Length: 149
Image (tube, one colour):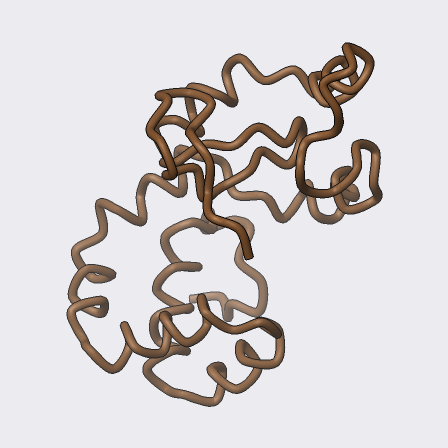
């Protein structure tokens, strides 16, 4: 695995750990991601290749994984709702638990995230964390399997 390069937004050397799924540009943080998203042109990868600069690392432009399906688009959580996660005291309290933090690190480091996630869903603490997150980001009218009061 090669070392990260410089961030396309702020220029921080060796800090660009993330890639834009639309154009492949590298960035280092959430603020740089937001800045990039505002300026991102989905055809930037093709323009770069046409200019003879070669392809950017990452998936090829137009690859099926680059184009979200309608179902994936419906499952996408708007940034405003994601921001609520950072404001939740209940979630902060859960994240103070060192065991939960270890579970989350194991998930983040796993190669096969889906199988690790299936295992984690057997852990009551992880299920409580997942339920808390979903309770924050899902609008009440969209929650499924909720019994009427």
